[in-house]
Structure formats: C-alpha cells, structure tokens
Length: 77
Image 1 (tube, helix red, strand yellow):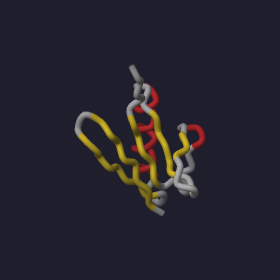
Image 2: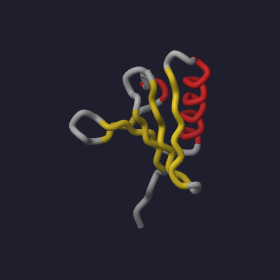
Image 3: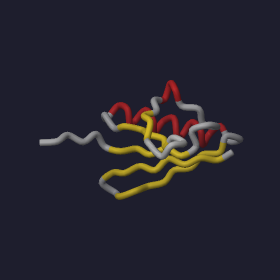
C-alpha cells in the first residue's frame, strides 16, 4: 500500500511518497513528521466526511492514514 505526504512550505507543495512494503520509505516519512513537529508545523489527514484531523507521529498508521498534508501554523493578527 502506498501513501503520500504533501508539504506546503517556501518551496511550494512537495509530495513525498511511501510504500508500506518498503520500511526505508516509511522511515523517511517518519523523519519528515519529526521535522514538521519540531518546527511547529501541523500534519493533517482528510477524514471521511471531508474535514481534516490532526495526526501526530505517535498516532500515525502508515497503512490507514495514506494521504497527509503538512501546513505551517498560522496566526491571525
């Protein structure tokens, strides 16, 4: 099973993929998760009703949460 993580940053939208049959690609996504969390970015997945749900590395299931989005934390002013 494959999945993708879309990262919105200063470079635009970059897509990273993983294959659950290839542990090295899953580890790469885990590293992206750590980097996102360390810099205060948020990781979401789309739920069945079309809304978003925040996902953390400790709750991520690479076989179930296959479409992730990384967004910067925004603050209003």
